[in-house]
Amino acid sequence: MTKAILICHRGLSRQAPENTLAALEAALAAGADVIEFDIRTSRDGILYVIHDETVDRTTDGRGRVADMTSAELDGLDAGSWFGAAFAGERIPRLSVFLDACKGRIGTYAEIKAADPARVRDMLAARGMLDRAWSFSFDEGIRAQMRARVPDLRRMVLFQHTGSVERAVAAGAHILEFNETNVTPERVAQAHAAGLVTQLFYAGAEEAVFERALSCGVQQMNIDEPDVLRAVEARLMLPVS
Image 1 (cartoon, rainbow, N blue to C red):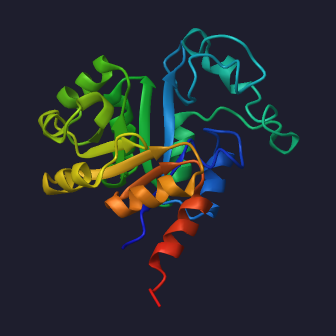
Image 2 (cartoon, rainbow, N blue to C red; image 1 turned 90 degrees about the horizontal axis):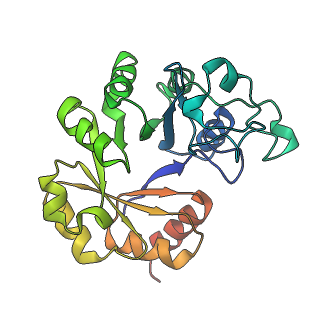
């Protein structure tokens, strides 16, 4: 068994405020191979790394990201909600975030509300396309990805496609499972079709990690890297 590629979901969001530069640095310190992050667009067209439609949960402000200017978003505190040590942490502009990732970590961009061609061009300008891929829950954005940015690798969810065949037909490069639908047969079929397999899991149950690793899942999009690595170490121990 080989070690899985570790993807820190929204950065290392158990130790630092999600989708911030602090969460990126924490993910790097934890040995992450890839960072997952979310992208939205301000009222004046600046791309930001933030998950929610509004700033209410993860900053000291209120309102929809799409209704706020970059000046307003740049002034928000995106760290104090998580802990006093992170007071003053900002919502990163995507340009700043990618600059901090360049040459240090792979990138998985979940596009919540942004032009995928702009995201692709920002990655390409930094020479980062070879270690990047994208996904969106928005069907319209997924269609734009297929039509306009074919050189940016795309991920699909098994829960959306329902089969490996439909994932291939959708032009996917990566197929993501979750703890309810990952099976050895589906993972093997995906590998035979040339797809990279991935698991999304926000929990910490060792049995889930063990099952996914035993199925042969190659990438783990998770919140608990220490649990994953502990399970891997146990599975790799020689049988006495």
